Image 1 (cartoon, rainbow, N blue to C red):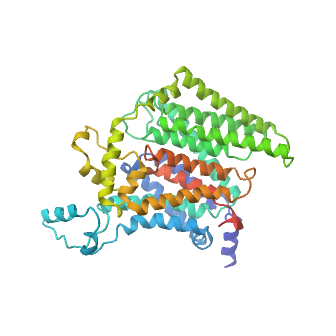
Image 2: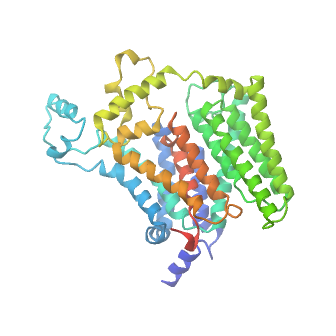
Image 3: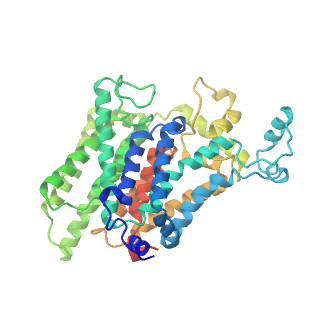
Length: 455
């Protein structure tokens, strides 16, 4: 009993680094960035991440139990609900119940045509396998949150540094790919353009978002006292900025305004506290951070004016593809047919094809709706949208009830990262791959206040 209590109070104390829960989560994050960027079509790679997460969960089951007992109550509820939604959709229901759900008349007709008993028990999900895969996708982020939330501030900082390192390695991989016009080094068999950086993803929008999130964590790091570390942070941030620009992703380049705003906020706060006399005058570190923010703004402005990569991407904002707009129109209609119960997590690809308008059919298949909020409304109905709203509210509230930002900039940075994911979700589907699911979980961990401050 005494050993367990001691472990709950200080996870990792008395252990070798490689035995600590923080080190094991670092491994999961590295695996996620390296393998999980391909989406549901690459189940074997996703399974490696999920099995690694389950192994970590088993090795530190005491911390998981501690999270369920002592973790922030709202966060525990959100994690459990996120796991429960796909599982509840898999429970077989009597015919009188599942046939009464919206959109199930077609299922009854299909069973009758196939000479199967329409009175048999069926789950709410229209595709059990897809919904089971969706549930498996929640295992790794749930493990990261459950164990990471019980770590101390130093271990959480190491998780953030690990994520930044993995993102920088991803940039270097992408640069190597570009040096061969994307003929060598691609991790997924995509129809790649020769001048676009994909790195460890099959979707350049997700690549760009990864670099934006890494930039936000970098901009939120504690100001180092040693100049070499400060220069390393500036160099790493510059490389992440370059990687985001090379993806030519409209949404990601627009989201670069968020880390820029965070750096400006930090410098403005330093000036304000210095004038109040509650902190020393601006340090060289603050001046370097301000200079880097000005440099980022200058690079983006020059690219926009001169017609560079950022400028070319800006022009594309005025010509949103017609197929995306038509998918939204058909998707809204499909979601209405299953509202408010939903068709089952992960079932979009099967359900959408039934409701696609004949005038909008093209040689390409709409595997995603390119709007995660609409897609969730189709798959999980009112419960799914309410769960998203609850997650967003929790993530926005946490930085407001912690200590001052001079001590905990990681929390505001993580909260802004969640906003970045939500904004890209309007035009894309960032959380439909295992990598960004795990990164989102890491941001949630950075939002959890240590020790007695949890609520």
